Amino acid sequence: MSIRRSIYNHSIPQQLPIRKGQASITTYSSRLKTGVTALLVPQGPLISTGGTLPRAAKRNYAETDDDDLEERRTEEEGAPMKSRQAFMTNHVYHTEEQLEKAAEQPEILIPIRINLDMGTYRLSDFFLWNLSEQLITPEQFSQIMCQDLDIPPHTYAPQISQAIKTQIEEYAPVATIDLPAGIQNVIVNLSLHLAKHLYEDKFEWDLASAEFTPERFARTIVEDMGLSGEFYPAIAHAIYEVLIRLKKEACEGHLPAETDNDAAYGADAGCRVDQEGLGDEWAPSLEELTQEEIERREVERERNIRRLRRETAKFGDSADRDYNSFLSSKRRRKTMF
Image (cartoon, rainbow, N blue to C red; front, side, top):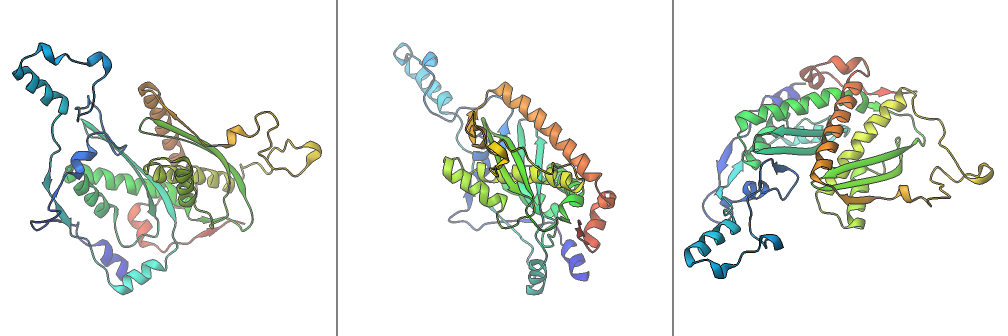
């Protein structure tokens, strides 16, 4: 207990400037704010960073003088990337004993989603958090995140850390339950949008199996479909969200005992038999969305996620524990029989 208390009493990591030379200047945060990723999305009109103009916007430079030409070139090329001093994070280092103790803890991953409106930008991030984590706190994580993205830590770090702790409290009652051994197949309907793309899929999943992880599944999908690297954590995160909901339903006995089987004469063919569509709905798909569709789906998704968190938080007697007592108390994993 003393080791854990000493770990969480560490101060927030501070920034240390990197010595002049190679890698002492960075444009990382500036490049993120151009809207090329789904992490930081500008909420106003984008500033052009170069490239060709639409056909309707082509200009006849023969009708302009040299001064106008130079001014228009500057507007089309856009403002250059802003570089800043690179800082080295002062990470908290731990003893071998602390590392070994942390490695012995079971890994219980829960999906964390961060959505912050920062005026001109919207921060949208998703990642997995280990409930058994002992080496870094949400406060330390949020501070490092603000430093990497070059956003004011005093303003947004408390909001990020509080969002992490709230979701830990809400998901913990279900995530810490051990399901009984045996095959427990469920049907996962996956739908997520990333930037301007909508990814949908439908597949079977064994809730009781730990051999095939959502991370492994997501990596295979990304490689097979040639998707961008952002889809890898997005798909894995979305699967974890669905599995927590299905696990809660399984604990409450709401999952169907048997799935529909349309095979002739009751043959053991499985739930994916489809004589008409030949199983076309059991395949991944990717389509591009309009801005109106993106906003509508974002509102609907956030509403569903909030409902899932509320329902999960009500499950079990441990839902009313605050974050500090959750960390300090000895975790007793429930076994369902």
